[in-house]
Structure formats: structure tokens, C-alpha cells
Image 1 (cartoon, rainbow, N blue to C red):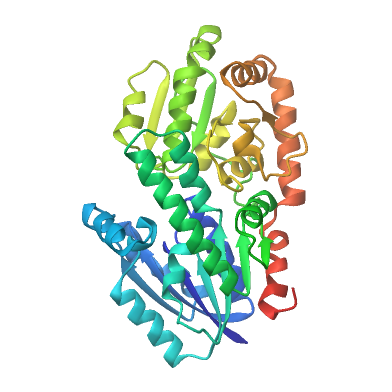
Image 2 (tube, one colour):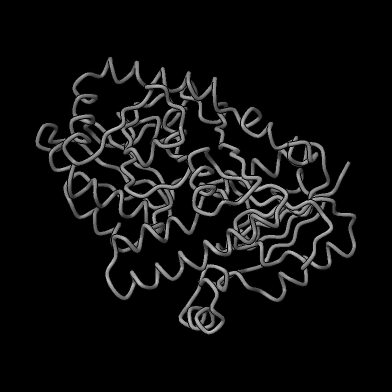
Length: 394
């Protein structure tokens, strides 16, 4: 049984947001055949107390608090000519902990979750290095720059260029670089020319997300349209704002009692302000997102900017909900016609209204969606290719 050092930019427990869900299931998979030593950051005070939840899958755990980046972080990054994304994760105690594990344990693989953690690699690692980029962060910042105004457009262009150079350097040094979808892997190959790039897709726990279970009802009358996600994350903020501005007023004209529930923790003030509009609910943190998914007439994922596979889409499909997604949100998911994909306010509104008007068709679409994820997206199946990479045979 080999030993793995798993470095993560955020503690993968509890698995209650996209990056933590992927990291949690990777950790569980790796623990089946290896002793795993976890060193990670936490940016939620509650998470600092939760590392015991990973005890079944880890031989040791070191979690370090990371404060949000500030102006000093940005200035340091500028002076050092580094991406702000890396400077925000630079920490002396973290480096000492990583070195201590490498010095004291027979680590044969270093598994890096997110490119920010690559700065903790030793100069010439003797261990196998697997870099899970998840998605291409530099492409995200490049997209921000395209739609932004000065000075933020300049900031984002700078971040995109520096991050892409960093990503290329890390990928060339790694034994394998992972992305969450083949589309994202292909984009990375095209932009960097890096070798040994692989797609390891996300899965979904269809036993946990099972519509056959009993869930408490959600109070309120009228058809419920649900969006789920971390609500201080810019693509999610932009998505719900776009839907609230461009689509939901039309839904309310046809269905005056329709409700749009924005379900997810840490809503920004801009998101909270949407709750002042008729029919819009902003929940903040909820005990169980499945309660809202089970109550939904349909799930929407109107992301205008998305990277990789969207867990929110898989979760809606697994709960047998009809899903209407933008092309960006659907990209990378092998949905085979089991969700509706619509681009632009008119087509997106048409898709939502047609499903609300035809509940039998909506229910059939939801059943087909669940069948699709059960057949295609179990975590065991999605992570199986990782075993060959760990063995060096792929």
C-alpha cells in the first residue's frame, strides 16, 4: 500500500460545494488502496472543526486557516510578478507542514488539487506528481477580462496571462494533469500544448440524491424554479441576476404565483437584493439542498460562464428534476437529450414555460435524466481511470 500526500486549497469536508465534492470523492477513492496524508486550507471557521469527518479516509490531517485575500495580497503579487491566485495561497506554515510529511513519510505520489497548491512542490520531486486542475482557471479570468471594464479588465487579463504560464509550467512537470471534462482538457491542450493531459469527470452519488426518499415540503404556493450554488461565486451571481432580469419576469406573466428560489450559502448583497422582487427567494445556507430540489417544478442552470462539469446540473438530474441549462452549463455533460439546453433570454424562457405548461413531459424528462446519471455518472466509474495514472500505466 503506497502513501499519498494530498494537497487541497480547501478542506474537502463537508462535501457541500462543487470543489469540495470532487476533492472528497477523490480522497475516498485514493484511500481504498493507499495511506493518504491530507494537508489543506480552510476558509470557513466551521470547517476548521470538521477535519475529523475525514478520519476514515486519511492517515493524517493538517488544516490551516486561510484569510480572504486583501489589498496587501494584491500588491505583493504585483511586486513579485505572480498571479494573485497564487499569492493568496502562499503560507509559511503550510509549506513547513508539507515538507514535514515529505521528510517523515515514504510518500510515493503527491496529489495536487487546484493549481494554487503546486507552489508547495519540492524543487525536484522524486515522487509521482498528479495535478488536478479541475478546470482551466486562466480561461475563466480571460473570459472575465473580455466582458469587463478598466481597471478590472486589465487585472483579469494580467491574471489570465500569468496563470496560464503557471499552468503550463506545472503541467509540463507533472506526471499527469487532470481536468473535469474532455472539453476542458482539449482547451488546455490547445492553449498550452502541455503533454499528459487527461479528463477525469465528476460523478454523482445517486443513492444520496434519490427522489424516492421522503423529503420535507417547502412552504409556499405556485410552481417553484430552483437554482443551487455557492452564492458568493461570480458565475453563480451573474447567472441568477441574468435569470431574474431577463427571464423570470416573463415567467411571472404566464404564472403569477411562480417562485424562483436561489438556494446556496453566502449570498452577496447583490444576490440578497434580488429577494426584494416579487416571487424571488434567497435562502442562504439550507440544512439539505435536496429538500428544495425535491420540491422544484424544474431546475435552472443559466450560467453564462462555466468551466467543466456542473455539479448543480448532475444533482438536479439525479433528483429526477427537469433541468433547463445554458450551453455553458451543459458543456461536458453527456446528457443525451435528457435536459433542455437553451441560449439567450427568449429560448431559455420558452424552455422553462413549455416545461411548466406540460408537467407530464417535464416529469418524463426528469425520469430520463435520473436514468442517465445512474447509468453514466457513478463516482466509481468516473474515477476508475485514476488507478492507471497512479500506477504509471497510462
